[in-house]
Image (cartoon, rainbow, N blue to C red; front, top):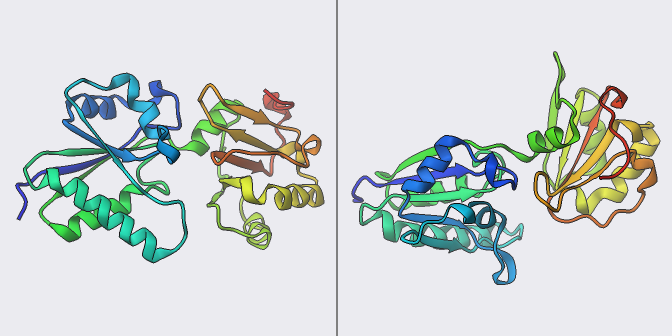
Amino acid sequence: MGLMATLCGIGVGPGDPELITLKGWRRLQQARVIAFPAGLQRRRGIAEEIISPYKEPQQIYLPLEFPYVLAEDVLEQAWQKAAEQVYAYLAQGIDVVFVSEGDVSFYSTFSYLAAAVQSLDPHIAIEVIPGICSPLAAAASLGVPLTLGSDRLAILPAMYHVEDLRRVWAWADVVVLMKVRSVYGHVWHWLKEQDLFDQAAVVTWATTPKQQIYASLRDYPELELPYFSLLIVWKRRLQAWGVGGRE
C-alpha cells in the first residue's frame, strides 16, 4: 500500500509558457518530481520545453518514453513501464507532477498513465489541472471565435477518413481536424469539392515562435506540415475577422 501520495496531471498549454494556468504554475513550483513525455532522439519534448523556464535546481525531471505507434500491446507495455517509474516515487510518499502539452484530458497520455499507476496501487490519489488545448489556441491565433451561438463543434483525431469528414460535416458547424499532416492532401480535395477554401485554415505549432498560419487554402494544395498541425473549417464565412494569406 502506498503512502497516500498524489499523481497530479497538469495541462501546460499549447506551447507559449505564459499560457500555463496560475494553479498549474503553483503546483509546478511546489513539485519535487516532474514527469513528462520524453522527446524524440534525445531532444526536448514540447511539454519539457514549455516548463523549462520554471525549473528549480532541486527538482527531479523524469522523462517517460511513450512510443508513437498504434499497436496496443506496445503502448500498454510503455504505460506500464512509465507507471512503475512514477510509482517508485509515489510509493515513498513523494507526490509526482506529470505535465502534458495542451490539456491532460484532451487526447493525452496522462489518462493512460494514471490508470496504470492506480492498477499498481489504488490508494494513489489522482489530481487533474486543466490546460488550454490546441483548438482553442489555434482559434485565438487566427483571431476567429471557434464557436458562436448554437454552433455544433466536432473534433476529429488523426485516424479519420474523408468519409468520416463528410458524415460529420452533415451535422457540425465547425470541424477541427487534429494532426492533419498525414491526410492534408485528401482534405484539400474535399475542401475544393465543397467550395470551403475561404472557410478553413491550418495552424501549425500554435502560440510558439514556430507558429505558421495558412488561410485561403486554395493556394496551398500541397503543404509539408509538422506533426503539431491542425485544420479548422467553419460553415460560416471568415472574412468578417480578416482571415487570409499566410503569417
